[in-house]
Image (cartoon, helix red, strand yellow):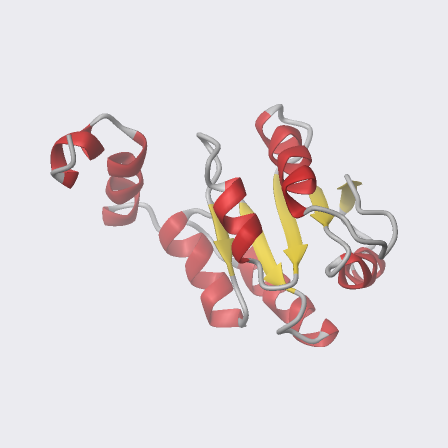
Length: 150
């Protein structure tokens, strides 16, 4: 399995810890490569490109709260990025929303908890059914008709 991984300065140490813990995974590390101040959109873009071009099967993004990276990643068609701070949320990210990017809030999870969260996400399976229909509503032209906005 190939996982693209990226973090800003606030997620750098957690990113490095994660890579050490999963020796069976090939990580495509797009940075940051130190804990000097950096901007999360740069690493979000790099991870999304890796995933969309097929250089990775899944991806993990890490920043302080996870919110900025969630917003940035979900701007890309074909990206389903889900923020998770515990195992249950990570599992539901995959089961209900087919999240292909897991986003971790480095300021709010311990190293050990992050490993449990990642394992929960990796071991979960997309349930399809009504969840697939909801994703199709997001991806398809029906969103304009059903949202009442246009």
